[in-house]
Amino acid sequence: MRVGNLRGRTDKKTGGQPGHPGKTLCQVPTPDLTIDHVPANCAACGLPLRSIAGEDYLARQVFDLPVPVPLVVTEHRAHRCRCAACGTQTRAVFPEAVNAPVQYGARIAAFVVYLMNYQFVPEDRLATLMADLFGVSLSRATIGQMSRRAAERLQGFAEAVRERILSAPVKHLDETGFRIGGRTKWLHIAATLWLTFYRVSPKRGDILTGVSGIIVHDHWKPYYTIAGVDHALCNAHHLRELQAPVEIEREDWARRCRPCSAAPAMSPIWRVIRKRQSVHGSSTSSPAAMMPSWPTAWRFTRLSRRWRSS
Image 1: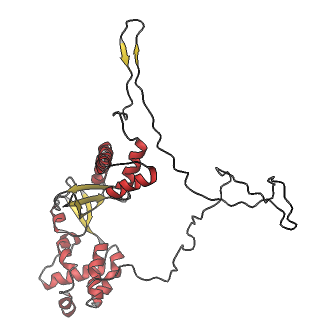
Image 2: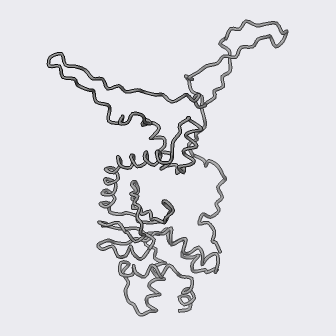
């Protein structure tokens, strides 16, 4: 049985809310093209009118894409010149980006990389799109090569992002499985408010090394093997864990626990955890020491009756 969405109903109307900055299309003072429409005949008597545009007119503007044009082919010629003094012939050097007799330019490569890696357009559909819109015939191999070359140029940037995240006082860790070449791989992320570092691995347990400070995660057990860090648990996951007891088993304690996930101290939750530990003979009360209890504390479904009756 599936549970409902965590987003509850509100009394807000659909659409833009009061105070929201609008993005209505507005006329511009200097259009790129102007077309004058002059009446041919008088609307009253029907006599011909002089086809001269006057100052009294209404204006309407149409925003559209320019007419597609064929690809612009630029030929680079590296000339060889002879020195008048010693007779040595010297060949000019091609620009670094011009490295083949025939190739696609940087703009096409940038467009392909953007659509593939940011808009997630599959390679086959991307090849069709480029052919339909621009008349550019690209194979899957060419598209993949453009993406790999862009990734190679960004290695320094990716390493800088990784180092900044590792040195941040708080970072979020998560992982998800996805398919690459018909095989299951794992996408690991480490993120702060402003930065996200992506890393692909064949193993789910290939956790990022060199981590320090506070790590926020979904209480997956391997994260607790990271040494020298403090743990903070993701409240979004807690709310999803509580959704099933609320909707399926109609547990009132789970409904009352959900609002406290927004409180910094989460005191009602800590009271539940402490109560569970007192039942099992533990006197530990510090949040850091109680951290290993979180994975079980958030699987309340079967234990709730024991807590309510004790």
